[in-house]
Length: 124
Length: 272
Image (cartoon, rainbow over the protein chains, first blue to last red):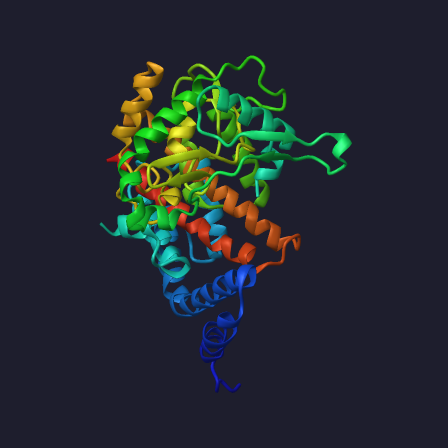
């Protein structure tokens, strides 16, 4: 399969088109949506770059926390963790829970909204 | 958003704004409530009020520097006045909705999505385990925050957008203003990104004769943060289901994680 341009390059090109060509010609609601669209493409670029590492860390954290085997999907592991929190078997006092959730949430916000104020608070 | 299911309807909103005005809350004058004779559907007309509603200029521009100094206390007084409004004669559309009822309501919505988020589970558990004792029911504005407040150089001019009003716990309104999303980046200022909770509560308590402390706000801030996260899920669902195909509705799904990090920050504080 060819990758010239790569997915990243294509997305970056479309983002440049929105920012430099389309958005300046728009007004009102359309201009607002162009900005949202551009921000969404920036999220796409960060997701492409950061998700593999972030998901691997999340997965390992879930396996450690649940003492689970490696044969479940990350979604299944998250469901299992949610059920055990709901059942009260894993609580805020369970060693490792809060730090796992914090690392995972921080990695997600780094992709979704890296300038979000709550992320700076979490890093302190 | 969740608005539609909880909204009280325009005629009831008009009645509420009038009641608030009589109680001394700064609101626009209701000039005319549409009737069937007008053949225009539901609606009402209000007097024009000059000011700014957009959070960013209010929090950053020099012209509002004086307003920012006094706004927390002004919000305290306005909330105290809202919470003192007599419940007799308020529109029948207002629903009773206390803290635990809201947890049930939002938990059900969240479970229906069937997308487990462990942070939300932990917040739900914490909220249920630490629920404060109920106190006297008051009229709750329901969406008291920048965006719904008209501000000029001297501060608060008008309280707008009463459609999420309900009967409930006064601490809900105070805490909703403190939810980090409504600080619009100015996290260091707990009240709306502009003020100190102590200033708000001093003014509030003096007006109402209550003795709320900053700690009384914590539980409700956690609940408000969780509610906003689930509201973001609801708005994303409008995109996913095809009801609203806009890029804005798609992108808001990627704001749920903001509330997850806020919940973690709050849980860390309570657990420390």
